[in-house]
Length: 541
Image 1: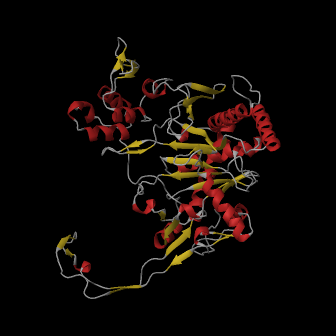
Image 2: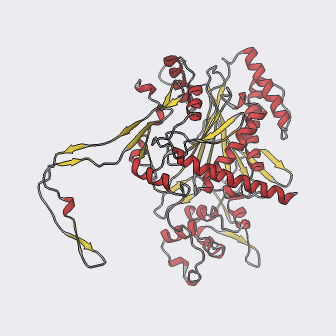
Image 3: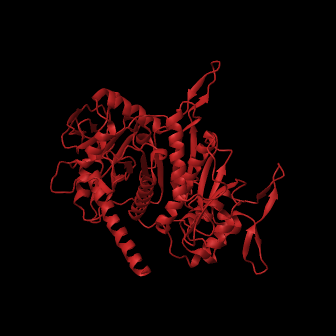
């Protein structure tokens, strides 16, 4: 196997990987011993550290098997499954969990109400703001975080503002970390969430340039982040202040459809503007109008070429969940209110160091494109055909045929949701298009509907398994590419015991379960979701 084509996907449509069965000799170079008592058993017997100081060299003959699975895409590194741990997990009659161990919140603190908050150390205040589920306690912490405008009866109705150096009004925030952590706590009363984070304009002057309304079911604003870390600006679809969604459990398919609709609409209308296609005016396009516009853009590009297209790729992502450590580290995302980001990426960027030079701009899907092209050139087979066949024909990683082997969670005629053979971040899920669809411009109304549903199912399933922080992103091909590169989405939950350190920065992903067992857990959640949907449908009838 070529090192730059190192993948678990075999051209013939099956998975290949390695198994380490370690036995090795260790030369003992230690010079001294320090034998000490470590403590005592409950029976009073001393526990001595003598095993830590062996005499002579060591022969290691009983180390656990380690499964080494190259990622389907070599630039994503390799997954290592701990054989003994995964084997035990496979026999447990319970789903693989992504939740933190132990209790992570406080039900109620009666004694806390009697404390003088000003004397409590800040790290403790941060911990309470993050974990407490008592609305009254959270409300008591607010004056420590910012200045508020109060009604005569003491009810908070807004933030206090002061003039910044540029003359613009800015809120009087005393402690930004405490303020955001309180504002993102789902147990804070909704009217206070609106005051602190959700009213349009409270987080800054970003203009609202789009809106999605579905009767009384959901309301979404589309903000322009003009001065963005993403060059050429990006857009954010945020659930509005009258459609509060702090948890994926509160999200329904109508919400997901609306969030994604704003993404499709922004990309299609921006491309249409670039190409000089007549716009539809300042309003929300219907699904049919959106499809009509997509077809017009695609026809124009097919007839007149794509070489002069200024923007040739898309960016879409979603950070779900918020957490702030008492030690001062923000652990995930900007805020917990459901929101998604998207943008257009240019074909190239102005170069420096050479006259009239340009360099290709970066898009994460380009790495997939480069590998897929090399794979097809080397083996004469389209990578995604081999990948999809390998998923369909998967055998259990540990070779057992008495346990489940399927990696699939959900599929229809357009897409499939599955557990990758080489999971990153303990609990990763992926979506891939089954048809030759490489980006949303190639995705018709039916494929887009399938994608929306699959994304909704993926985050709901991960949430049901205990995930509280999830990063989701799109991998798509450029509009200018003719390669058979399929549109993909990755769902990466943050695992409580894997904050991202030495191993992860080397792209060495370590898990304690077999992917087939995680897929089984996900399918169990999907069955529960379908039962809930059926139950809700029955109630509505």
